Amino acid sequence: MFPLHAEDTITVKAVSLQDAGKLVTATKAPSLTASDGAGLLTTLPGFNQIRNGGSNGDPVMRGMFGSRLNILADGGNLQGGCGSRMDAPTSYISPNSFDLLEVVKGPQTVLWGPMASAGTLLFERLPEHFTQPAIKGDISLLHGSYGRSDQAISLVAGSQAGWLRADANRSQAKDYKAGDGSVVPSLWRKWNAGVTLGWTPTDNDLVELSVNGGDGEARYAGRGMDGAKFLRKSVALKIEKNDVSEHIRKLSWRSYYNSTDHVMDNFSLRQPPMMKMSSQVGSVVYGSRFSMEWEQDNTLLTSGFDAQLNQHRKKQPQGWQADAETRQLGLFTEWQQSLDDDNKIVVGGRVDNIYANDLRPTREGRRQSWLPGTFARYEHRFPDTHVMAWSGVGYTERFPDYWELFSGKAGSQSFQRLKNEKTLQWDTGVEYRSESIDYWLSAWVNKVNDYILFDYSTPVSQATNVEAWTLGGEAGVGWRFAPNWKFAGSVAYTRGENLSQHRPLPQLPPLDGKVELTYATDKWNTTLSWRAVAAQTRVAQDQGNVTGRDHGYSPGFSVVSLSANYHFTNNLELGVGIDNILNKQYSEHLNGAGNKQFGFSSNQRIPEPGRSGWINIGYKF
Image 1 (cartoon, rainbow, N blue to C red):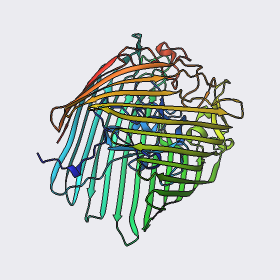
Image 2: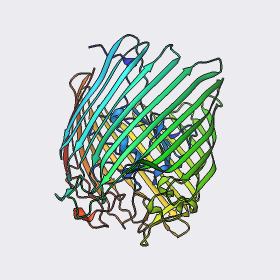
Image 3: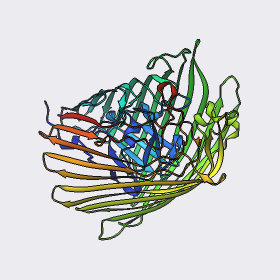
Image 4: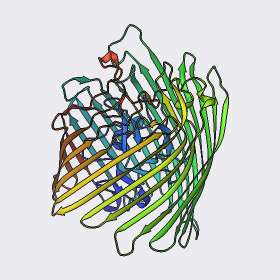
């Protein structure tokens, strides 16, 4: 067994805010492991998910949903196939397969595809670095209530010339019980595996090829069908060259292929009804991105292009048939200028050409748009203090996505009728760091022209454009008030208004806060956490998005949990925890409607798990 070198590891113990509201967190933790990408995101302030039950919720950031979030895994875009987003992109992302999650809040970057109004999420694997031949890895085993059982392993072998990394994980759970003892259909079984080959012919060159796949199944208390198959295949190639010349700091090229194969039915994971139904759908995404970083003195310029081809498909007796196709080509430039040691400005711009082709038998035609996006941000570090502040404005136009153009819930003729969504947003924030206390605050306000809204108040649902605005903010604090003791807290709030209809925007999360008290020593730490969520009284009955709609007011709730970790050695760690200690009966405001086949009413929110325990052991070598 080879030693583990410091330069070969990275440890992120908690959420960390970087420049201008950029948030970075580890995707692996000794606590109860998230079963998918949305589960990980909900641990961060400002994130929620539209709940389905046990797994595969749809992520929401600052009240924004769907393609208002730009989600990339290994630099590649991944899309599901279900017309109601049963298989949201994060359903195919296993946090254990990655190292870091980077979040850019708001339209404050142009580097990773069409600008997203809510934010950009990057699930990334870190490149490996070896100074001598070595083998390293980590293994984790988790067991919990309601049949929860996870296993994950990551192994890396390498030298100065390159490395080979293998990741594999498996996760499963049975139906859970709510606080009142009722059983909520929610089981899942998933696996993911992948291999990454890295080659470093010189200290400045990197070639990386990764091949990944996975599959699974999930039962949903809030849907008429379950997910019987979540097959994913991914291939990604990355080539980078650093320090090319005096001013060219980096050249980077990425190319990827992602495909999904999703089966929905109403008989594999539930009591078969009189009429069995099944559907097989999926998507294929090809993409490529090239960028160049040019640097001189205090100026950094990043320019490049990206392109993507996305085909949605359905399985027919004669084989796979594409029913929708979207093509995107974009040019981008982002300029960073350090004015002095304490002041920096960042300006970015991009333009995208997006083309959509309706390949259904009805063939409503084609549509094409040129979409501009731009932002400007000023960052200031106050001299002789630990304070950094920023303020920025961004504008982006969003092309309607597959679920808004083609989904049956969008109504007839949505392909031609829906307008592009236009968002103008102001973001600002401040961050303070010292040895004893950290705090951060971010806020935003935006005006959205032609906001795309789904209306379910009539027998036939439809998507329409309205004028809207949203505002809100997130704040957090960490205070080391005594030796071995730390207090941490965070809060997030979102408010929105449908200006066209003079009513609240639907599917907005209520005020959500969390406080934690931690006692830590060199060997062990324990954390008591309390999450409190306010009642949501600002609703738009029967309006929402393609996945969820407002069911009316929701009551507030609070949940207390306890966790502890013990380090036997630097390499061996044990984690235990109890979630929802008081066995509260509660439901999240953003939720799927219950399904009558499981005894839920159509307006009943799916309840969350009651008291549950878990134990996790991790070993690094």
